[in-house]
Length: 486
Ligand code: NDP
Image (cartoon, rainbow, N blue to C red; front, side, top):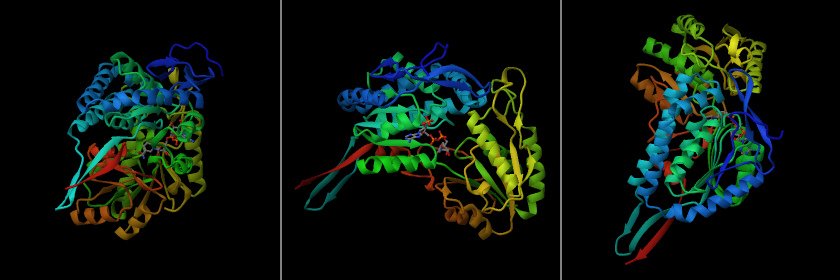
């Protein structure tokens, strides 16, 4: 559709300017909690990507030649700019995504600020290696920025995931073309306002809005975008890998998950129960790290089932703006339909819904919003589709197990390998299981504790290019060995 006036329509940010898309086409931006359109998003295409590449190439020589201290100072200014407008950012994230406002304000936006601060400081402490060869010479490694890099992110943690890519890419001296999910673009637009306000040099960061098949694919195809950092679904990751491979692009792919939450009878029960409610339903279950398959040791299975469903039934589904709401809206109408279809699939596979299972119809402001009850299902085999495919919504399954080997086989049975959670007070078992679980992250007696210095990401179909802390800086550089003979 062509553009029409809404209060909150957004524009691309290219070469330091706010630009209409070349074709003047726009997409509707929906508020999931109300089901209404509140703004328009540029429906950009290859021409917009091409002009962003020209801008980023133009900015690269001077940006890459800045000292690390100077780039650190720019990133700190961006962090300050977000912090000064934290309420506006949090409100935008909640409106775009449907997540409770308090979650956006206490988790998502502060973590986005931390991304800029962490990599601002990391670049000032970063060093490269040198290797001496006795009587022969010395080698040293030059770590140079790649040039123009692309960052593509999904809708579930929109600003946090995008800035986790942008910050290290800029810190190392690259210039960036970023594409947020078209479903949740507004915080990225606010980020471009911050960059304009602080006077970030033109072309250093460019934000091109639009769909994956048009903007994302054009970025993957563009010869001048030398590296891509992508977070999203495994099918999209596969497509990007196939398109990028013949051009030998450097890729980081953070993909989907089907995470197990393994609970032994000797766990700290209260801590486990409270955390399992969070790890199942935070952000309506739309966090790649949520545990969607809960395996419970048989002696406590019935007690867990009773206590867990009682707590889940108390979670208030409501307007994301209300402080009392624990569960907000799911991100879009198609996504709600997908999640509901998985609940039907679970029933057809023999599952019994013991909590939730239905769409929620609110009244007032949110009467047309997209809400689903937090849902718990039992009675399914570990190998059925419901237990193998990513649902990415407020739906978990529970099932009992008897011995370690059995639950390991259940946990490792999917094609995914992102994150596992384990509850036990038995130290030997904790270490044994951590080693045997085929996942990139294992949390023991906790969930979603993040330290930006540690490697993050999954194995198997959950991704490649797992890095942490300053290692992320390596991804955004090319290593060159220089050898000097004595
Ligand atoms: P998608 O894979 O559909 O989209 C992710 C991003 O890729 C979006 O910006 C999308 O654009 C874009 N895109 C779509 N098609 C292409 C293409 N052909 N070329 C380039 N870019 C493209 O994922 P969702 O947005 O639905 O996000 C949910 C998924 O993300 C889940 O699978 C979840 O597990 C995963 N995820 C993984 C995380 C991790 O760290 N491993 C963290 C968070 C989420 P558009 O939105 O416009 O379609």
